[in-house]
Image (cartoon, rainbow, N blue to C red):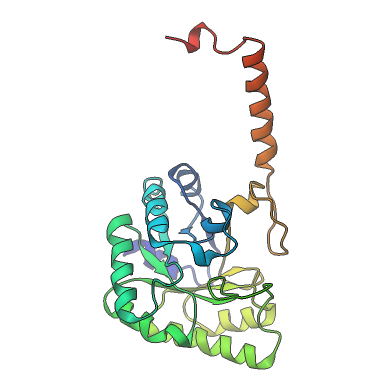
Length: 257
């Protein structure tokens, strides 16, 4: 797979760009600029106002992924496997195959380390490309999220999990809200790329939720930089439309049949 090979070759050479998409229109824009487009289960909070990603279903992920795929020509497409879809190896393989066959994505992403290592091995053995995810794990976190890697035992576990995932065959690992020096150590000690979100510039690449960086999602967290305020532009366009309708300036003859 050339896309995957090209991605792996970026390790220590060129930063990897990854963003989320949940529809064709956004994906078609991102495809011009991204190495990876992730259909994240973050769509639960971004689109459906769920309090956690645990309420996202397999069918939701598949339907949004089908749309995203229509907008992708060159980027590697990764789809999150939602909560309770990979509780054991049999379930994981069945659902991963369903995702890939119905969406034509390139890979799936699973959260966790040693706890899911045999599941990851089983998927890889069956020729499923897997991306790992360590640090903050939204599918299993309870209470307020906090960054990972402050305590020594936590640091040792995350580093060990990263090495186990690499050995199991994942092609890259997302590090979410991992303390800077730990993210640097993991990145330096792995041969596969790390993709950071709130995990410092030492990672091989970065991922953000697109709606967050364009200012479409009213969120204030430390790791998000807002590059635009798209809500402001949408509001301005709607006001102009509303005024044109009320003043009978729209539709004009050229807009009518």
